[in-house]
Length: 157
Image 1 (cartoon, helix red, strand yellow):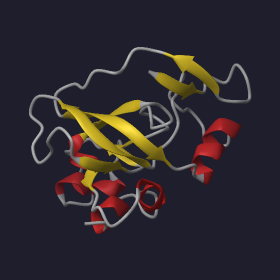
Image 2 (cartoon, rainbow, N blue to C red):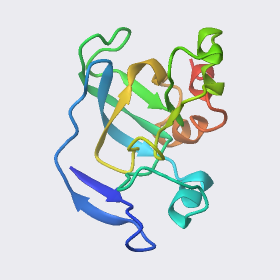
Image 3 (tube, helix red, strand yellow):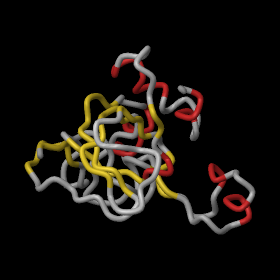
Image 4 (spheres, rainbow, N blue to C red):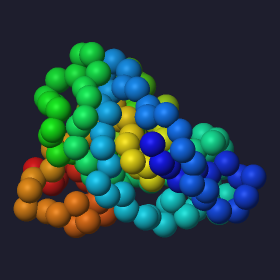
């Protein structure tokens, strides 16, 4: 796949060709149709946010279709149109996660910051944080809505 990679060796993103990621258990492999450019992405590339995963594929407003569902995935099928927001993973056991407030998790992972994002032809994402997108929104309209809040995608349905 082609991807835009950031590794801090240069102040810009660079285009790279790399193997498609493989979905692990609980993950979706998504063919990316659109990915917004948020000010947070610029903060990451500009070095304003400390300790991103490096090298990194930025982008946390992903819209695409499911190509492959990893083992244990429920609620999603190949061909489903999905969105991937900023919140990409949580610990699942802290007090916040246990009370349904995973957006406050003690150990979160963030799409396009600690987890590779959507500035690529495809991306993997934890299915628990992906959302189905209604057809009434185009890909370009839906992408920025995935950033409005950490759990914004849930309001799209």
